[in-house]
Length: 106
Image 1 (cartoon, rainbow, N blue to C red):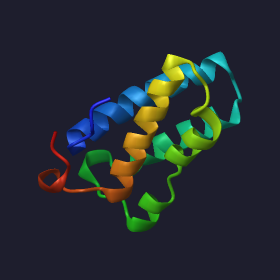
Image 2: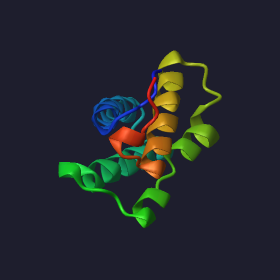
Image 3: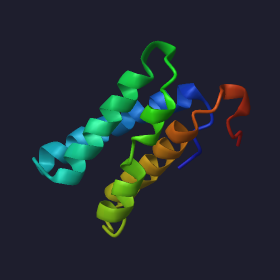
Image 4: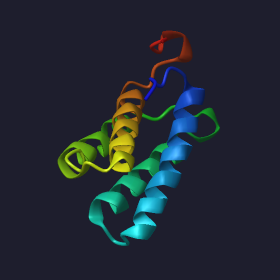
């Protein structure tokens, strides 16, 4: 997966990932990791809506990358592996929340 290198990329990948998790969640209703991941992704979307900058406390309260490592990384399914990559990217970008001019450029 390509790096998220702008807030526009972040919002695009976040929206796509929410849809992916909703699909997995509908296939395995109530699976705790998907429920928590979806909750946190929706928080991220709300905290960054309309150009809002999330607070440091908000940025430090997201654990989707850790949940992916603990609960999903060993699943060989390519769809789950893609989801894990997305969650790691989103978590890292959200935690750092760089300005577009200081984000990593590929």
